[in-house]
Amino acid sequence: MNIVMTVSNAYTHDPRVRREAEALAEAGHKVNLIAWDRKGDFPEKEMISGVNIIRIRNTFLMKLMILDLIRMPFWRSKALKVILAQYSDADVIHCHDLDSLPIGIKLKRLNARIPLIYDAHEIWGYMVALDCPWWKRYIKMEKRLVQTVDVMLTINEPLRDYFKDFFGNENYPDLCQKPIFIIKNCKEYNGEPYQAPTRNIFTLICAGTLEKSRQKHILELIDAISGMVDIEFIIAGSGKKKYIREIREHCSKSGNSFFIGRIPSDEVISLTKECHASICVTGEETINQKMGLPNKLFEAMVTGRPFIAIKGSYCSDYAIERGFGVAISNVNECVIELKKLIMNPERCRQYGIKALESAKKDNWQVEKEKLLMIYGHLQK
Image (cartoon, rainbow, N blue to C red):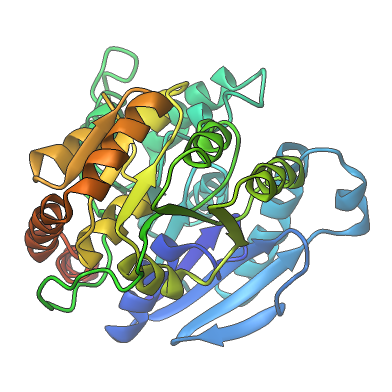
């Protein structure tokens, strides 16, 4: 099949999109991906693991605009022109997240025969809620636009249930339920047994997107851990310059916390494996944050490491149910739990074994087969 994917980032550092695109290319499909390289950091055209990537850069006019939300329609317009000029014979259009979905909607209107897949990584309106006063507009927009899609993909059960309510309700009585499939952001599992951390001192890792709204406890945690002994804290990732500067400043005052910046996604697994535990201190401000399953969870699973997360979040419940999760309500509780783990290496090992047992059931190979099965049905 000739597949066109759209995503509003540069693709390179988006593990979910890369896994899906590369899995489809590996299965023999022709995958053309239209990305948005906002800073112009990557080649405009590139082939990675069989995926043909075209990156659209900001024009001079777009650079004059203050917000990406304002630039977004211009990117979508340029992406649509590229698709119509080069990939008008596409068999499937696969749009990642709400910000790229309007591209697929317009293509669907031009050619109703093209199956449209909407891949919702999160509830986009809630993602921008803390920074965008008009965020409710995107919730309503999503409810309206998804009525046109043929198949939905999302990351977990809570999001599937959220999107199910969009269909067959009183607002859209003439439309039937759409198929919604779960493709989790699982990682590759090589089947190796539990291996102890290689670092001599107990090391906690937090790797991922570093935004104040998502990781609001990081600064407090750095300060709290600075008063502990026999522990080091590694923070990896990228985010807004102001918040990264704050993280650097707090780390510089601490003798045992280290900010190492963004590292390639394929190196996060090996670094996590060196450490003793992984932590996700995602804030509790939005439904997205409460319902998500972050990459850190699956990285902890495949490396066999305890996973510390905010009590009441879905990722915390998910890990605890499978026997490798540690729930905390605040930084003080986190310090207490860390001390327990430091004093009890056997407990860490048991958590690690449970994590690996979970990885045997939830891994990328399983999710990839589900994705290929969905595409197999579209070919019929």
